[in-house]
Image 1 (cartoon, helix red, strand yellow):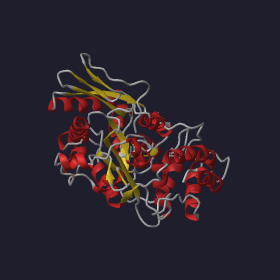
Image 2 (cartoon, rainbow, N blue to C red):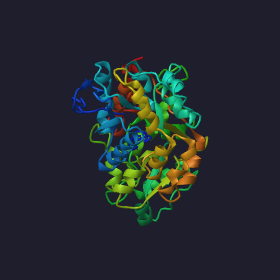
Image 3 (cartoon, rainbow, N blue to C red):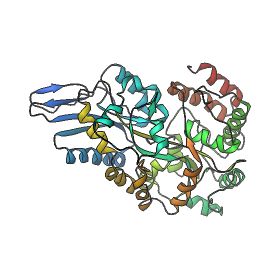
Length: 424
């Protein structure tokens, strides 16, 4: 998923969008047609812009390799990769889509698909025209990247939310490493024992995927949206679950106070060795392997009264309405989500592949013991659904959720504010 570390965050993640910072017009020289999303030279060669989020060099290098593989297969198609931090992506994407200045190839997160379809091209006709067999894609993420019965993106990753933990901190504190199926009580006991010497047992943040996965597990049934697509943040079950999660910071003190809105907060705290556990997704493995200065382990979301539960999310690639070269863009997207490419992304831990046939590749370079954890998480996970206007909800959750986490307001009051101020 796009990656947001749960971080969810991150991915998200993830799992985990994309926004390309400022004035992106790709030029390729020579006489030809130009647009914001790409251009065509007089010899028929097409250059397409592709917007993707990336957290640093490792991420960007992985995506540049994907862009290069499109050209290897279709020498007349060049891809100009433009990256930005995940936190900036969706803030700007809507404006660019509405203004007709979006990249040809648009990266999309399943959580947010419904809010951006007005600027994206449905892919159903191109799927049919090109005879693309979509049966190999995980059905939950295909549904997540669809809206109103139309497919708006092809997925590259899918993943269930899990716990990442610092093996070194567990060992130093004499705390047994978590096993598949461990409970909320086990989690709380470990977090308390690991909170010592200015370090914390866990790091929480009011970011939707990670937070709501933990709340779902704790309560067994509290979800942020009902089947009709309406927010349900003010149910008693949700208020109870949200208060429990906020109190890990506000009352139990096993998670650090949050100084302000910062979508990278859990990532920074975990990688800096300041927190022993965080909620995350398989999309973050590449970054963790590159940056962590300690042993990293994976665990299932702790089980509540109804057992292990989690949400799943993912990301994919679509085509903007303003793209003047949809046929070439679809060839690019098809290549970027092919079994070959997704197998390669999986083998370096960048993405838990959305194609079922190559999901085994992810385990080849993942952390030891990952497979039983992901198998258990996937078996119990359900797709995370969001409202059509989800971005404002995310912002409000951060704004009021941080106050609850820091003990400045109650969970009930925070959720009432989010529910009241969120668009329908």
